[in-house]
Length: 64
Image 1 (cartoon, rainbow, N blue to C red):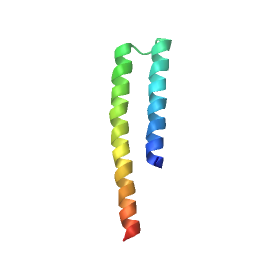
Image 2: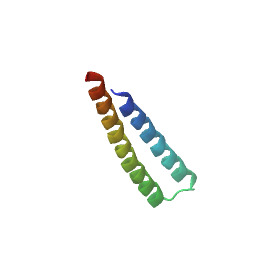
Image 3: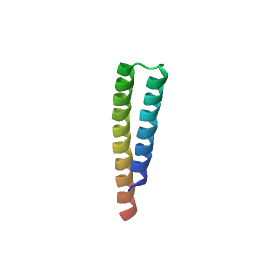
C-alpha cells in the first residue's frame, strides 16, 4: 500500500472518530455529523488524487 493512501486512510478514520465523538457528547447534531463527514470525505478523496498525481509526476521525472 502506498504511503499517500495510508495517510488519507488515517485522516479519514480520525475525522470519522471526531464526528462520532462530537455526536455522542452532544456538541454536534446528527445532520452536522453526516454533513461534516461527507464534506471531509470529499476533501480526502481530492487529497488522495492530488497525492497520486504528485507520485506519478515524480515517477515520470525519475524515469526520464
